[in-house]
Length: 201
Image (spheres, rainbow, N blue to C red):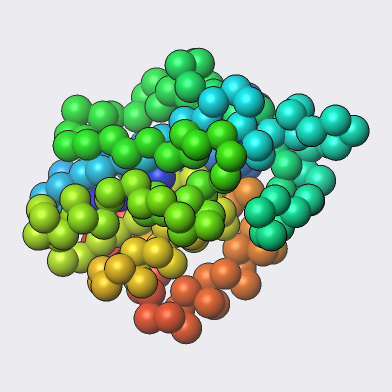
């Protein structure tokens, strides 16, 4: 089954959001236009409690984008974003969601960050997505969304480890830091992940 996984196309990652991805809104019409090509469409949402450990506001004396150590791992401290039940956590209003069969929420545990759609950053807890996709008979998995260098990248890495044949849809994704993402793209290619455009699917 040909499956599309749309990562975190949420208001807080848009140009006017609290953690804006440059040109993040550009991908919305691209994602809408290609949905008919897929048998199964799944989406994810960052869904943080307001006291989430990754928010700089929850650490005295720390600023946005400082890096600290939590549970033995490096942790970037982010502006408050995608807080449960807020407008910022909602999908972009122009994103077509009618064909979404399921939405998986991540980052719900306040004690650990969760970039990947499949696991938290410590790989301590699964979201259940891998089992869901396998039960649905997914053979080919296409990924896109925001941000390409963080949540999309970590989702692709975990999808590959779970045994899925993965493709990254370049024109349906935007990165928070394009310089970093150029390096990550090389890493993806080295792992056998195909980089495609929405027109070539």
